[in-house]
Length: 83
Image 1 (cartoon, rainbow, N blue to C red):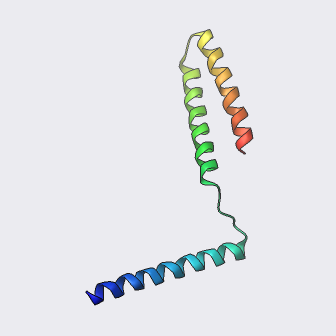
Image 2 (cartoon, one colour; image 1 turned 30 degrees about the vertical axis):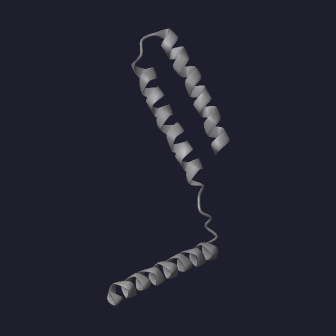
């Protein structure tokens, strides 16, 4: 049982060392961690925009085209706020 405990302690020490080295590297390079929520939102809006563009190309209805155009304008507005 002692060996397993020592392995866990070693793993924790290695993890702490990895975290410390990563933080030091970020400080040296000046890289700031990106906001994951902002990245998720941007990615989601871009995917929605791509899907709407495909729908716009496929639709024959002028009413639906106008709805899609308005939705694209709203997505573009939201993207400009996120960026």
